[in-house]
Amino acid sequence: MEDALGAVQSMLVLGGTSEIAASIARRLVENRCTTVVLASRAPAANDQLATELRERGATEVESVLFDALDTASHEKVIGDVFDRIDVDLVLVAFGVLGDQAEFDANPAAAVSAVETNYVGAVSAGLVTAARFRQQGQGILVVLSSVAGERARNTNYVYGSSKAGLDAFAQGLGDALAGTGARVMVVRPGFVHSRMTAGMPPQPFSTTPDAVAKAVVQGLARQSHTIWVPSLLRYVFVTMRHLPRSLWRKMSAR
Image (cartoon, rainbow, N blue to C red):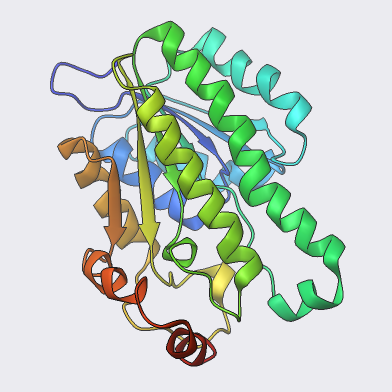
Protein backbone atom coordinates (compact mmCIF):
# COMPACT_ATOMS: atom_id res chain seq x y z
CA MET A 1 0.00 0.00 0.00
CA GLU A 2 1.07 3.60 -0.59
CA ASP A 3 2.27 5.14 2.67
CA ALA A 4 0.54 7.87 4.66
CA LEU A 5 2.16 10.53 2.48
CA GLY A 6 1.05 8.87 -0.76
CA ALA A 7 4.48 7.53 -1.70
CA VAL A 8 4.82 4.24 -3.58
CA GLN A 9 6.22 1.55 -1.27
CA SER A 10 6.46 -1.37 -3.71
CA MET A 11 6.89 -1.68 -7.46
CA LEU A 12 7.12 -4.31 -10.17
CA VAL A 13 9.21 -3.34 -13.17
CA LEU A 14 8.35 -5.20 -16.39
CA GLY A 15 11.45 -4.57 -18.44
CA GLY A 16 14.02 -4.35 -15.68
CA THR A 17 16.98 -3.78 -18.02
CA SER A 18 15.49 -0.56 -19.43
CA GLU A 19 17.58 2.52 -18.65
CA ILE A 20 14.44 4.59 -18.14
CA ALA A 21 13.03 1.95 -15.79
CA ALA A 22 16.29 1.94 -13.82
CA SER A 23 16.16 5.71 -13.41
CA ILE A 24 12.53 5.58 -12.29
CA ALA A 25 13.32 2.83 -9.77
CA ARG A 26 16.22 4.84 -8.34
CA ARG A 27 14.05 7.92 -7.83
CA LEU A 28 11.17 5.99 -6.30
CA VAL A 29 13.52 4.21 -3.88
CA GLU A 30 14.91 7.60 -2.86
CA ASN A 31 11.27 8.59 -2.31
CA ARG A 32 10.60 5.77 0.20
CA CYS A 33 9.87 2.80 -2.09
CA THR A 34 11.28 -0.17 -0.17
CA THR A 35 10.36 -3.19 -2.31
CA VAL A 36 11.32 -3.59 -5.98
CA VAL A 37 10.84 -6.58 -8.28
CA LEU A 38 12.82 -6.37 -11.52
CA ALA A 39 11.34 -8.59 -14.25
CA SER A 40 13.19 -9.23 -17.50
CA ARG A 41 14.29 -11.91 -19.95
CA ALA A 42 17.75 -11.93 -18.32
CA PRO A 43 17.29 -11.60 -14.54
CA ALA A 44 21.05 -11.79 -13.92
CA ALA A 45 21.45 -8.59 -15.94
CA ASN A 46 19.61 -6.79 -13.12
CA ASP A 47 22.15 -7.71 -10.44
CA GLN A 48 24.04 -4.41 -10.58
CA LEU A 49 20.85 -2.33 -10.43
CA ALA A 50 19.52 -4.48 -7.59
CA THR A 51 22.69 -3.84 -5.57
CA GLU A 52 22.45 -0.13 -6.26
CA LEU A 53 18.81 0.03 -5.18
CA ARG A 54 19.65 -1.69 -1.91
CA GLU A 55 22.44 0.82 -1.34
CA ARG A 56 19.94 3.61 -1.93
CA GLY A 57 17.59 2.30 0.73
CA ALA A 58 15.45 -0.50 -0.71
CA THR A 59 15.04 -3.31 1.81
CA GLU A 60 13.85 -5.97 -0.63
CA VAL A 61 14.96 -6.25 -4.27
CA GLU A 62 14.56 -9.35 -6.39
CA SER A 63 14.80 -10.32 -10.04
CA VAL A 64 12.38 -12.62 -11.86
CA LEU A 65 12.12 -14.02 -15.36
CA PHE A 66 9.68 -12.24 -17.65
CA ASP A 67 9.35 -12.43 -21.43
CA ALA A 68 7.03 -9.94 -23.13
CA LEU A 69 6.56 -12.31 -26.06
CA ASP A 70 5.56 -15.26 -23.85
CA THR A 71 2.08 -13.93 -23.14
CA ALA A 72 0.89 -17.33 -21.92
CA SER A 73 3.22 -16.94 -18.92
CA HIS A 74 2.18 -13.43 -17.92
CA GLU A 75 -0.65 -14.35 -15.61
CA LYS A 76 1.57 -16.71 -13.63
CA VAL A 77 4.67 -14.48 -13.53
CA ILE A 78 2.80 -11.31 -12.56
CA GLY A 79 0.35 -13.20 -10.35
CA ASP A 80 3.18 -14.82 -8.38
CA VAL A 81 4.56 -11.37 -7.54
CA PHE A 82 1.14 -10.08 -6.46
CA ASP A 83 0.57 -13.21 -4.35
CA ARG A 84 3.71 -12.42 -2.35
CA ILE A 85 3.71 -8.61 -2.34
CA ASP A 86 1.11 -5.85 -2.12
CA VAL A 87 2.22 -4.12 -5.33
CA ASP A 88 1.58 -0.37 -5.44
CA LEU A 89 2.95 0.30 -8.91
CA VAL A 90 3.63 -1.71 -12.05
CA LEU A 91 5.88 -0.12 -14.66
CA VAL A 92 5.57 -1.37 -18.26
CA ALA A 93 8.99 -0.44 -19.59
CA PHE A 94 9.88 -3.16 -22.08
CA GLY A 95 10.03 -2.45 -25.80
CA VAL A 96 12.19 -2.46 -28.91
CA LEU A 97 12.90 0.37 -31.31
CA GLY A 98 14.25 -1.63 -34.24
CA ASP A 99 15.22 -0.30 -37.64
CA GLN A 100 12.66 0.55 -40.30
CA ALA A 101 14.93 -0.57 -43.14
CA GLU A 102 15.28 -3.97 -41.49
CA PHE A 103 11.53 -4.19 -40.98
CA ASP A 104 10.95 -3.35 -44.65
CA ALA A 105 13.32 -6.15 -45.68
CA ASN A 106 12.17 -8.62 -43.02
CA PRO A 107 8.48 -8.40 -42.10
CA ALA A 108 8.93 -11.15 -39.50
CA ALA A 109 11.21 -8.80 -37.52
CA ALA A 110 8.52 -6.12 -37.71
CA VAL A 111 5.91 -8.55 -36.40
CA SER A 112 8.17 -9.49 -33.47
CA ALA A 113 8.68 -5.82 -32.58
CA VAL A 114 4.95 -5.11 -32.68
CA GLU A 115 4.22 -8.20 -30.60
CA THR A 116 6.72 -7.00 -27.99
CA ASN A 117 5.69 -3.34 -27.89
CA TYR A 118 1.95 -3.78 -28.20
CA VAL A 119 0.70 -7.35 -27.76
CA GLY A 120 3.00 -8.06 -24.81
CA ALA A 121 2.03 -4.81 -23.13
CA VAL A 122 -1.70 -5.44 -23.62
CA SER A 123 -1.33 -8.87 -22.04
CA ALA A 124 0.69 -7.60 -19.08
CA GLY A 125 -1.56 -4.58 -18.66
CA LEU A 126 -4.75 -6.61 -18.48
CA VAL A 127 -3.26 -9.09 -16.00
CA THR A 128 -2.07 -6.18 -13.85
CA ALA A 129 -5.41 -4.37 -14.05
CA ALA A 130 -7.26 -7.47 -12.83
CA ARG A 131 -4.95 -7.70 -9.82
CA PHE A 132 -5.29 -4.00 -9.05
CA ARG A 133 -9.08 -4.33 -9.13
CA GLN A 134 -8.84 -7.12 -6.57
CA GLN A 135 -6.58 -4.99 -4.37
CA GLY A 136 -8.71 -1.90 -4.78
CA GLN A 137 -5.63 0.20 -5.49
CA GLY A 138 -2.54 0.43 -7.69
CA ILE A 139 -0.89 2.46 -10.41
CA LEU A 140 0.03 1.15 -13.84
CA VAL A 141 2.69 3.33 -15.50
CA VAL A 142 3.06 2.72 -19.23
CA LEU A 143 6.04 4.01 -21.20
CA SER A 144 4.60 5.13 -24.51
CA SER A 145 6.28 7.58 -26.92
CA VAL A 146 5.57 10.72 -28.91
CA ALA A 147 6.30 8.48 -31.91
CA GLY A 148 2.78 7.13 -31.43
CA GLU A 149 1.20 10.55 -31.84
CA ARG A 150 1.82 10.59 -35.58
CA ALA A 151 3.84 7.90 -37.34
CA ARG A 152 6.92 9.00 -39.26
CA ASN A 153 7.83 7.32 -42.53
CA THR A 154 11.26 6.53 -41.07
CA ASN A 155 9.93 4.52 -38.11
CA TYR A 156 6.27 3.78 -38.80
CA VAL A 157 6.36 0.21 -37.46
CA TYR A 158 7.63 1.41 -34.09
CA GLY A 159 5.33 4.43 -34.17
CA SER A 160 2.27 2.33 -34.95
CA SER A 161 3.05 -0.07 -32.10
CA LYS A 162 3.31 2.85 -29.67
CA ALA A 163 0.11 4.39 -31.04
CA GLY A 164 -1.71 1.16 -30.27
CA LEU A 165 -0.13 0.94 -26.82
CA ASP A 166 -1.03 4.54 -26.04
CA ALA A 167 -4.68 4.03 -27.04
CA PHE A 168 -4.88 0.83 -25.00
CA ALA A 169 -3.41 2.49 -21.90
CA GLN A 170 -5.78 5.45 -22.14
CA GLY A 171 -8.79 3.17 -22.53
CA LEU A 172 -7.67 0.95 -19.67
CA GLY A 173 -7.27 4.01 -17.48
CA ASP A 174 -10.86 5.03 -18.21
CA ALA A 175 -12.05 1.47 -17.53
CA LEU A 176 -10.36 1.52 -14.11
CA ALA A 177 -12.00 4.77 -13.02
CA GLY A 178 -13.70 4.29 -9.66
CA THR A 179 -11.84 1.08 -8.79
CA GLY A 180 -9.04 2.70 -6.79
CA ALA A 181 -6.55 1.81 -9.53
CA ARG A 182 -5.30 4.14 -12.23
CA VAL A 183 -3.06 4.37 -15.30
CA MET A 184 -0.44 6.96 -16.13
CA VAL A 185 0.80 7.19 -19.72
CA VAL A 186 4.33 8.54 -20.27
CA ARG A 187 5.14 10.10 -23.65
CA PRO A 188 8.86 10.87 -23.93
CA GLY A 189 10.47 12.35 -26.98
CA PHE A 190 13.87 11.15 -28.24
CA VAL A 191 15.69 9.67 -25.23
CA HIS A 192 19.48 9.46 -25.18
CA SER A 193 20.05 5.83 -24.19
CA ARG A 194 21.52 2.53 -25.38
CA MET A 195 18.45 2.07 -27.57
CA THR A 196 19.15 5.26 -29.52
CA ALA A 197 22.97 5.08 -29.49
CA GLY A 198 24.39 6.12 -32.85
CA MET A 199 21.21 7.84 -33.98
CA PRO A 200 21.28 11.58 -34.72
CA PRO A 201 19.71 13.54 -31.83
CA GLN A 202 16.26 14.97 -32.39
CA PRO A 203 14.75 18.28 -31.27
CA PHE A 204 13.44 18.28 -27.68
CA SER A 205 15.51 15.21 -26.81
CA THR A 206 15.71 14.08 -23.20
CA THR A 207 17.45 11.63 -20.86
CA PRO A 208 16.34 8.62 -18.79
CA ASP A 209 16.77 10.62 -15.58
CA ALA A 210 14.68 13.51 -16.89
CA VAL A 211 11.92 11.04 -17.76
CA ALA A 212 12.18 9.52 -14.27
CA LYS A 213 11.92 12.93 -12.62
CA ALA A 214 8.81 13.72 -14.67
CA VAL A 215 7.27 10.35 -13.77
CA VAL A 216 7.75 10.93 -10.03
CA GLN A 217 6.24 14.41 -10.37
CA GLY A 218 3.33 12.99 -12.38
CA LEU A 219 2.65 10.37 -9.73
CA ALA A 220 2.54 13.04 -7.05
CA ARG A 221 0.04 15.04 -9.12
CA GLN A 222 -1.96 11.90 -10.00
CA SER A 223 -1.57 12.78 -13.69
CA HIS A 224 -3.05 10.50 -16.34
CA THR A 225 -0.61 11.58 -19.08
CA ILE A 226 2.82 13.21 -18.98
CA TRP A 227 5.04 14.45 -21.80
CA VAL A 228 8.81 14.64 -21.52
CA PRO A 229 9.83 17.34 -22.04
CA SER A 230 6.46 18.93 -21.26
CA LEU A 231 6.77 21.31 -24.22
CA LEU A 232 6.11 18.38 -26.56
CA ARG A 233 2.45 18.44 -25.53
CA TYR A 234 2.07 21.76 -27.36
CA VAL A 235 4.40 20.86 -30.23
CA PHE A 236 2.23 17.88 -31.13
CA VAL A 237 -0.96 19.91 -31.03
CA THR A 238 0.48 21.45 -34.19
CA MET A 239 2.18 18.33 -35.56
CA ARG A 240 -1.03 16.29 -35.51
CA HIS A 241 -2.74 18.77 -37.82
CA LEU A 242 0.00 19.47 -40.36
CA PRO A 243 -0.96 18.67 -43.97
CA ARG A 244 0.16 15.16 -44.80
CA SER A 245 2.47 16.29 -47.60
CA LEU A 246 4.30 18.63 -45.22
CA TRP A 247 4.46 16.02 -42.46
CA ARG A 248 5.91 13.52 -44.94
CA LYS A 249 8.74 15.89 -45.80
CA MET A 250 9.45 16.78 -42.19
CA SER A 251 9.38 13.22 -40.90
CA ALA A 252 11.83 12.01 -43.52
CA ARG A 253 14.64 14.05 -41.96
